[in-house]
Amino acid sequence: MSFAVSDGVSPLLHAALTGLQTRQDVISNNIANVDTPNFTASSVDFESALQDAISSGKFQDGSAAPSVAVSEQPTDTPVGANGNNVDLRHEMVASMQTQYSYQIVARGISDHYNLLKTAAVEAR
View 1 (cartoon, helix red, strand yellow):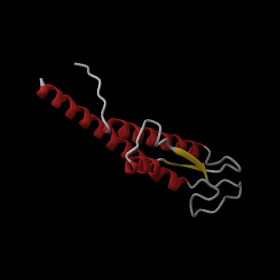
View 2 (tube, helix red, strand yellow):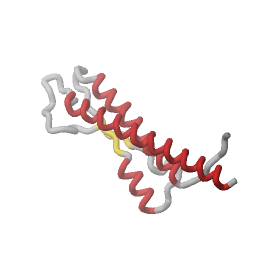
View 3 (cartoon, rainbow, N blue to C red):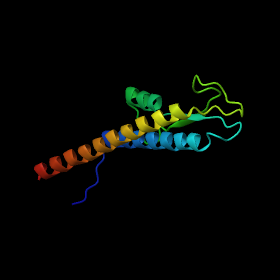
């Protein structure tokens, strides 16, 4: 059975997954460049935009797009001798946290659609 759903929760969950995927991509790039001279680590923020969109009640697809910021000093780790500021320990922890968050949101999407499916079947 296939059906189209238009509700307020699905786009929010999709925006959260998109933000988490963008964060994981940036973390992977930081890790890949841990030994690159003069590389500056980046970070991703999407939670504040998502929270603002929810609070205002004006969420639309794309209104909570993740932002990638290059930071001069994202951690307390000093810049290395080669000018690189990637803290591998910090990036690995952030990667694991992002992976767990992604799994939780993906489970939320699955549960949400199962609930909608059950409601549709009961409504018949």
